[in-house]
Length: 174
Image (cartoon, rainbow, N blue to C red):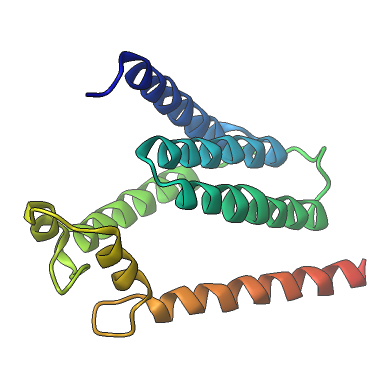
């Protein structure tokens, strides 16, 4: 049985995560937004640690909270001055952004619940399966068979490499 302390701590971190997620999107200062995102990523690592996935929590801190946030801040500082204020969006751009966000959310939810994810099963079928082990999830994420995600994983690593090279090129031109 879960202890009351763990349950209270879970809700506190969940509230912190929601608040910082909201602040990440709502702030007009980009460095503050990156800092708030860092707190969201650290909260995610806390959840991994609380679930007993110490390796996954350490990877979350090392890769996302460490490496990706450094890359974000590096890119932000290379492209604009930290004291620049962003202009408020006009009404029609706000409406267009809202429409695009809703459409993207609907498409992502459709893909999440209908597209095959694990062993050719959709998420609704996977949730009704009695037990899925970490080995099954790891094999699905880094396997090369049908409905496995090694190719997108490698494509993202190439994309990050291209971003780093682009940052170095921009830094040399300044």
